[in-house]
Image 1 (cartoon, rainbow, N blue to C red):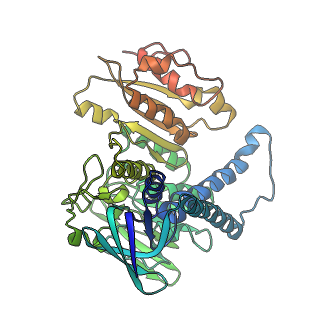
Image 2 (tube, rainbow, N blue to C red; image 1 turned 30 degrees about the horizontal axis):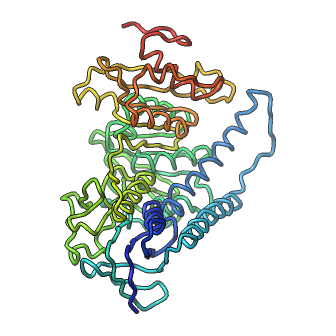
Image 3 (tube, helix red, strand yellow; image 1 turned 180 degrees about the horizontal axis):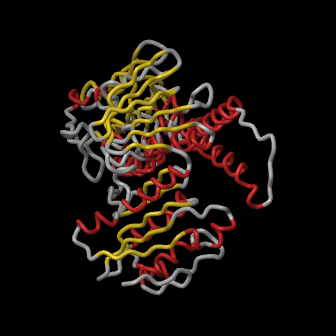
Length: 469
């Protein structure tokens, strides 16, 4: 069977399906090829199911801590089977929504695995058997990524697992070892710890959450200890040995061998771009030396009518970045003057407490040659945070002392994932700390922390003591 398309999109994840919809809205005949599920990894085994479990775990924790405000609950139980069923319902609802959006925008969906066979053609191995050829004028590669495997820790899907299986355990584990203290590892560590799991984290780098602002990372380390999560830094994972219903994990810290036994070992050391099966050579698409697809600011590869987006084109590997890149690619294909010229791509880590960041860290700003200033405001001084029993953390603004331009914002604390959007807009608009300080924020809200941190940056804090120069 042969099929013709103006635009072929390979992958219906958070980058692919918005690209397909936008191209169709702008008059193109669009075909999407998806091998597994609409919405991609994010919707099915990543962002959405993990956040469902994270939200449930925070509620579970807060119920048990409510005695402080005179609410005592007895007989509170976790029905893990029911929670998993609810999580799957959330996933299905969103996946069905993506399907309805594609259908409503007249995008054809082909279920199967696509491989480029030339600069204007692809072969699809259909999910239900057989194959078909799709000829296209433009193509958007949005195949995403997969977990990285490391020697000595080959996943078996039961005892040695990736994040996919870690969200589907048949019961809450009593003990869990996690290799990697990045975003995925610590999110899972926090929600299982809230449910009572004894969690041990092994991280090769000298801080948790490598790449995150150092001050924020250090605060997170204290928060992990508060939650009862054990972690080992500058630790080299050596092997995982399965014996019956247990797995024994060996690692080294400072050259000294250590060992810990658990019900499961989660390997969460990052994700690799899924480029190998795309047939890039047949189309003439070039790869970067580190394995991702090279693109320009229009998302064009070395073959101008073949585009690539999302995890395929390197860090940061974030769903919202993929979505915006998909829209850029679609609009460029349709003749619009779109570019990937974002001032920042905000990052969010749904730990407990949450972490969110936009722009440069303090160390990055110094390395870039800025005369760096910092403004901070602790949530312990926020009336809204106190009334919500969520006083952990702070908001931190990094700025240039000469121009007063905001260079970066880093938040650890309640609802950081929602608060960071103001920072992203500030960076896009080229805002100064005065702009943030003089923007009226409603009271009492968590968002006031941004204005308070900006006032601190100016040297005139009202609700905290002025720091020594």
